[in-house]
Length: 258
Image (spheres, rainbow, N blue to C red):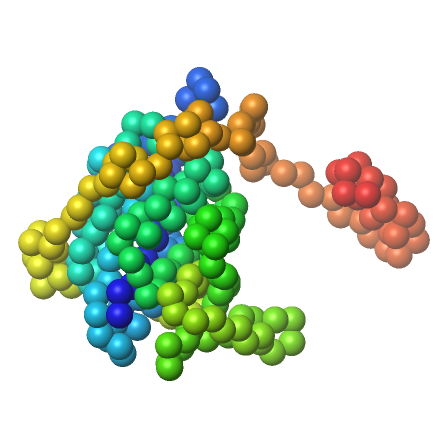
């Protein structure tokens, strides 16, 4: 089975976030890590390989320096890595990212493409669906359990009561949530072996992607401003029942919730 795990390099959740003059998130090599949500997709890919054989490919779109985090995925257990990198990709929004990843998946070929549920630097959660749309294939989303059998992928998705079941023929695209497994850590043996595992690099030309449809040129989203979160929040204690409901309503109006 050919399993491709789409992973993103994101700033550490503890790193101080800064924006450039054109309102793009400043990305520093020293703060970069594998998107925490994608660790669950990688683990699920490794588990499916253990059941069905084949190989796991770690696919990432990012700068040249992202090879370091691809190498970490190889140390955890992926067989090889693929980096999609090109100056024209800088500033890509979710749709531009999806176009590049979809083209890479088509070039690689896959039986199973796995995604995390979101990225820790944006929490958009739309890239898996956008990739599926570009490829013209269904997405089995937010899987808490995944089974592959008889040429089909079947997932369980948590619902308000119990769970939903969805399935699709292979090749299939699946996004997973954090309850699906517990990611493993790289072993010393895995770290040593990762140094010998290949990492291929694709440019937009290699993928046949029009540069005007990705990056800043193709972005439909634009950040216009930002402000830090106020961590010094003041609480209000209301004693007694008289007038409590009115005060709650007034507070919600003040906060523009109502």
